[in-house]
Structures are given as structure tokens and as C-alpha cells.
Amino acid sequence: MKITDHIKNAKGKTLFSFELLPPVKGQSIQWVYDAIEPLLEFNPPFIDVTSLREDYIYKEQENGLLQKVSYRKRPGTIAICAAIIHKYKVDAVPHLICGGFTKEETENALIDLQFLGIDNVLALRGDARKADGNFVPTPGGHSYATDLIEHIKNHNEGKFLHEDVETFKSDFCIGVAGYPEKHFEAPNMSTDFKYLKKKVEAGAEFIVTQMFFDNQKYFDFVKKCRENDINIPIIPGLKPISTLSQLNVLPKVFHIDLPDELTDALAHAKNNNEAKEIGTEAMIKQCKELIDFGAPVLHFYTMGRPEQTKKIAKAIF
Ligand code: FAD
Image 1 (spheres, rainbow, N blue to C red):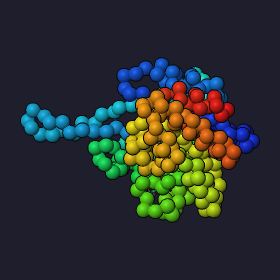
Image 2: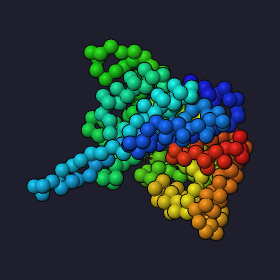
Image 3: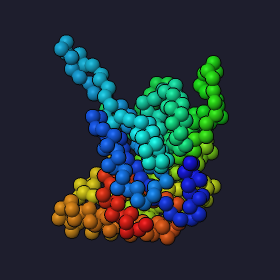
Image 4: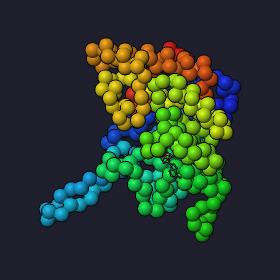
């Protein structure tokens, strides 16, 4: 079922969902089941599975020349989604990224997703490869999420890349990323909004936000979206603090701020266990406010570790 229909059917009740990343290569599908099963009691209508682009390194050869070697860390987004919908009868949402895929490969992925009965996709540009620093599009691939959305919309209408193949129509419900604290590359918030609106005009039907720790940022973002005629559901993405090092890592990696109240509380934490307890309590408070505000879904970035999210969900649902 489409995420927009899940939200409609909930009639204003806030739903619970989460996302996991594929395990590192070499793990089995049991890793995925262990990451999901503790959270099923909260009836997630959908579960997201992230996608990671191949990276590369330069390896010195015997002749002294450098050879570029690509490597894949976490395979299996589509396979994991297939396992989820067929084992748990819960909608699985694959993250489709521009980076690492030619347009033909994207089309192949969409054909597989339709075949597997997957109704939703989150369309993203994707992170930069570590080796590149900045995002570098794949030759023959898409450069921005907007281009990918247009591709999926065309696919929905049965317009394939090459006219000489048999086509069919699909009906993917497309989600996109939104940044209450601005995407780090955008020169300012209004430019970022301009492109967010383009994504909606191209066919996005729901937004999932980057993590944030200050609800006011989300409230302001929703207000600004509505003022800009962006009227689709805006799902808050949430990540409870679980280690002391995240105080520095999260702002650096995700370009977000942590509010004083949280950093002051964490300053008293002596170890990771205490930091996790503080992070859990702060997230419970954050979630209660979001429910009061009428957030359609609380979407947790579990990173495949369900315990803390379970504790939070138990306190609020
Ligand atoms: P876009 O919407 O394409 O925007 C990228 C930047 O370009 C922005 O600064 C925007 O303002 C600007 N821009 C947009 N369109 C144009 C245009 N036409 N011309 C000029 N500038 C433009 N990354 C992964 O690799 N895998 C994942 O699974 C993944 N999941 C994510 C899930 C969520 C909910 C979020 C919030 C992020 C996720 N990311 C993931 C990270 C995301 O890929 C990065 O933040 C990436 O840098 C931007 O992706 P986007 O889809 O927002 O890009």
C-alpha cells in the first residue's frame, strides 16, 4: 500500500516506522530479521531500507602504478525489501539513489521493484563517496533527486528509456528527503526550498526529514512548506542519541544542531550508558511533542539496532 494511503487510513493518528541500513557484506538475512522483529509490536506500516553507493580506493600495483578499485560495503537494498514484504507483510521502502546507477540501471531496479510488489520508493541523490569528497554523478546517471523523480514518474506512465522494449505502467508512490536545518550544500534556506518544491512538482508525494533534535526546527519547516504550497505529508526522521561521541559526530556528519538543553544534559553523562539514557528520555519528550503537533509518522533511524527505539516506542505508543 502507498505510504500516503497508510497516513490517510490512520485518520490523524501518528504512526510508527523505522529504517535500517543493509548489513555489511558477509552477514546473513538473519541480521535484518533481528533488527526488525523487536519493533513489529508497534505495527509499523512501512520499513525503509537505505542504499549505499559503491566507493573506491587506489591500490598500488607491482609496477608502481595506481589502480582504481571499487568496493561495495553494504549490498542488498532491493533483496532486503523483498524479504521484508514477503516475510512480514509490511511495506518496505527502498531508498533509490542517483549515485552509482546509470539511467538504464535505475530502470532495471524499478522493473525489479514493480515485480516484487513494492509500492513506495524514497528518491534521493545519495551521499558523496568518501573518495570523492563531493557528490559526483555517475556517467549516464541522474544528478539530482528531481531527475530521478521524473524518471520514476515516466516509468509509472509506461514511458521507458528505449522505445523498442515492451512497456507497462507502474504506480510507485515517491518520497523525498527534506532538511529542516537546510541541506549543507544549499547556499541558503530559500534556495533549498526552491528545489524541495521542484521535487514536489516533479511528483513527490511525501517528505521524510533529516534528523533533528529541536522540534521547533520541524515546526518551522512544516510552516514554511505550507506557506510555499507544499502540502504533502512531512514525516519527521528521528535518531536518539546513544553514545557520547555523537555529540560531535552527528552535527559534523548530518549538518544539524543539537539544542543546549540536550548538550547540557549530556555534559553530565559519565559514559555511553548514561548518554543513551539521556538520549532516550530526550527523544521520548521530543516524540510526545511531535504527536501533539500532529506529525503523521514518527520515523526512527535505527541503523539496525532496535533496542533503544523499542524503549522509546513503548513509552509513547
Ligand atoms: P537533492 O534533492 O538532489 O539536493 C541536493 C542538493 O542540490 C541540495 O543542496 C539542493 O538544494 C540542491 N539541488 C537540488 N536540485 C537541484 C537542481 N536541479 N539544481 C541545482 N541544485 C539542486 N544517502 C544515501 O546515500 N543513501 C540513503 O539511503 C539515504 N537516505 C536518506 C534518507 C533521508 C530521509 C535523508 C534526509 C537523507 C538520506 N540520504 C541518503 C542522504 C542524501 O542522499 C544526502 O543528503 C544528499 O546529499 C542529498 O540528497 P537529496 O535527495 O536531498 O538531494
